[in-house]
Image (tube, rainbow, N blue to C red; front, side, top):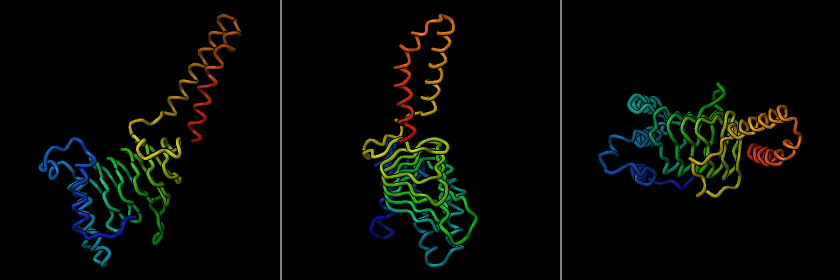
Length: 239
């Protein structure tokens, strides 16, 4: 986590995030009316300080009002670092014991949720610095998403994800490790299900062709191509 700074400096950073992360913004007017994620984070900053001072009911009331207005549910006890940007934001849930690092980008419908009803324990995930969590992703339980990693849209993550990795799917699999942060483009994720279906369809086509032609050489000729596809698929799912 980054060093502690004043509340005012944090809020200034939060207001600046749309200009850094969203090319759609053209004016300050939009900042006030079109970025509920920014307002949710700023209100969380205030409510979190009340919560730490044991004014828990007041902090919950603040975030309850924020939830009604923005449709973003952040528990005031959660720990959120600097320069966190919730883009679009609708449907985002950040649980009580969640820890979010700095420079994290969260898209709409993301849940940082728990899988236990036990009180007094850490039930929610830790999202380390530089992570991108794609729209609709669910990160569940006391797990850690390593620095600069990427969670694909609509993935369900229930296990730790190493640093500089990409995880996709239900349940999510780590499909690439050791990637540089600059290469984590959330629109360039491989579709492992599609790759498997393509392999199966091509395999069936080869078998059907053999049955019709009775020419076994077709299998030998096309097996090499299919083996390459299958090897790529295995490499992908093993990460």
